[in-house]
Length: 356
Image 1: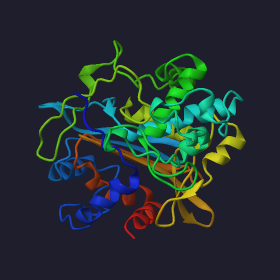
Image 2: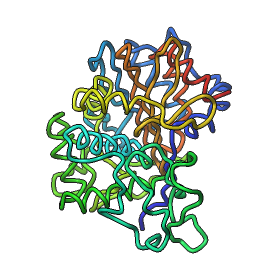
Image 3: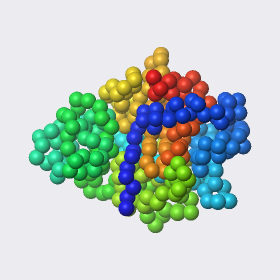
């Protein structure tokens, strides 16, 4: 049975464990936890019971380091091309698919999606005609995160679309359906053609198929070290369960920060806050936006499922970035330390916003 999806954005991922990190006496000092000192980092991960950590470090717009720590299986070190399920880090990829199509003039961010798709659960609700890609990418649909959380298990509006923020995986699934109806092909194929092949992300896929190398999959674990069943999705989900490597996703992030596959207009819209969320931050088109001062911003997204905690923060102006992938429910406890050590003052500002 498919796991219960607990996918959440960075705000929840880091906040719920920030106090735990702050009191962690085992955390090494900034001078110990450095790129050069992998041995100290491995020991720190063991003390924090993190089976595998994938770390992508971007400096000056280039991938400086893509490394995976820990053992993939007992006695077998994890290779740097270990494949991780990245939970909601799927959403920025789906967002970039839509933004790429918009850049090519093949998709209108403000066209009502009922022209292509209406979910049967809300077909009789006139609010369904208000849904657009822009509203979905900025989490203003009015949908719950997942319909299974509603009393009758059906998709419903909890407020009028476009009037307030509420994080929703259902919105990205709605977008997937609209894209597939419009272009007559599955999202897995659209993503391959528009994103994965052009960026040479050869180990990235929305689905588990004959090309998936099961020997490189990072199994997910709970806080007690018990292994979860591996998710083997046969059809794409626009919000969840993308499989990728540190290197692949880091190169995706570099393309995001550079706007290399988008038109200038769409790139600027992507980085513009569409709606305030909380604590002085915003949601843009597929990305959380953190004001850093002097007009500088960080773009971020987090992911959380059973056996998955993942996060990235990128700073387009300085071309710096950090990708953190873990395969345990406990993974978020390492976020704050890594953010500060690898992104310096910008990392501190992001962490401070979350812990206000």
